[in-house]
Each structure stands twice: as structure tokens, then as C-alpha cells.
Image (cartoon, rainbow, N blue to C red; front, side):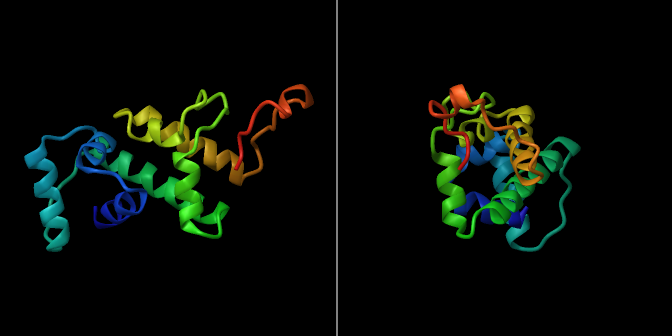
Length: 133
């Protein structure tokens, strides 16, 4: 949870966006988690929240591999992207959509780019679309 909070700080997420990423727990529950995490206390998170945090960690790691400067990775998250997965919106919009699927879409996209499995658009569309970076 402490690492999630550090990444959320880096990405500039406010409390509501952080809660959406985590599956929209109540404000008191979220603040309780944060307090326990800061104090190195013990607390339990359900599987859905753990999966969401895992996706955030994976996204953060992929951005660290793909960009030399972490701020460039954050800029990519915030920049509009014409890849079909993002539909012209910033990838961050999917991350803060409140759905686990949104998080996993961004993670899968970055994993595909890292693994060189991502296919660039055809030559006809290459000049019209900017997927990466």
C-alpha cells in the first residue's frame, strides 16, 4: 500500500482518483488503509484491491523500463493516445475509470510494448496515428 501511495503521488492522483483505482472503497476505509500503511501497521486487503495494486505496480515498472525519466512515463500516461485501446484518450483515463479491466488494459498494452509484441499500424495509418511513445 505504501508503494501504491508513492506511485499515486508521482502520477499526481488526488484522493478520489486513488480510491477509484482501488475499487472505490469508502473514504474512511481508504484513509484507514493509508494510516495503517504509513505506520507500518497490519491490515488486510481483499483480492480485488490487491489485483488493482498489482496492476499499478506493473504499469509503473513497465514505464520505468520504457522511459529513462519517470516524468516522461507520467507524461505518456497523461497524453492523448490514438491506440485502439485508448480511443484518443490518455491511458490514465482507463487507470482511474474505477474498473479492474481499465487497469489491466493499460498494463497489457505496456507489457506488449515491452515484449515487442505490439504491432504498429499499417503504413496507410502510420502517419495518422501516434501510439507510442
